[in-house]
Amino acid sequence: MIALRRSCVAALAGAIILAAIGAPAAAQTAAKAQAALPTAAQVQVDLFRGLADIFSRGMDTLTDKLSRQGYSARVYSTDGWQSVARRIADQYARGHKDIIVAIGHSLGANATIDLANALDRQNIPIELVVTFDATEPRQVPKNVLHLVNFYQNNGFGKTLTPGPGFQGELTNYDLTADRSLSHTTIDKSPRLHAQVIAKIVEIVNKDLANKIQASKPKTKKPQWKKS
Image (tube, rainbow, N blue to C red; front, side):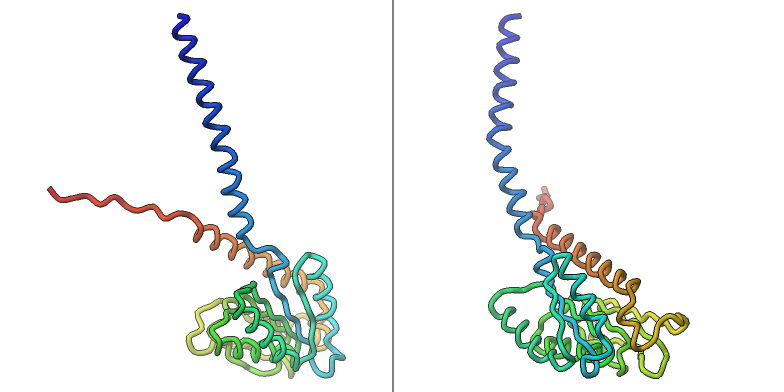
């Protein structure tokens, strides 16, 4: 009986020692995995106003909402897409591959497609493009993974179509029946802002899930030898 008790005590002590040794290693592994995941600050959101910066102040409001949630959000005039394209390309060349989101209203919505085309020529992906009443029926380039187009058949808004090689997600939301919206107010809708923020959260979570899956060690299938 005494020998049995001693055996049990020794086994328990061994288990505690192994757990103590393994716990820090497991914690370090979990910490490394967490550190490798992108944060909200690594989601780069560039927003573009329409004509003369007058009628697109909803882009400023949305920029403020995103910034308060921790995203790296900046708003530009329509022609600011060229400087944004250069900045993103330079960051990419230096290894800073953040999640890229572009949002625009009216002529600023057209500018997001100009930005996407410029980055497509350099093989730089855009995770999400959101357009509010884009005024030209543009084709979406193949480097865009998700595109949401809010529009109305009001003489301004146009649908967007997939361009050559496009394999992403493209959704045109026809809001013509919503009389509370117009070309000059569609970018200011709190309801649409909430949908945009929810979409960003969705795609970031999806990106995180993909990164976690990619970081998991691959298990090799046993090779059975023929007798």
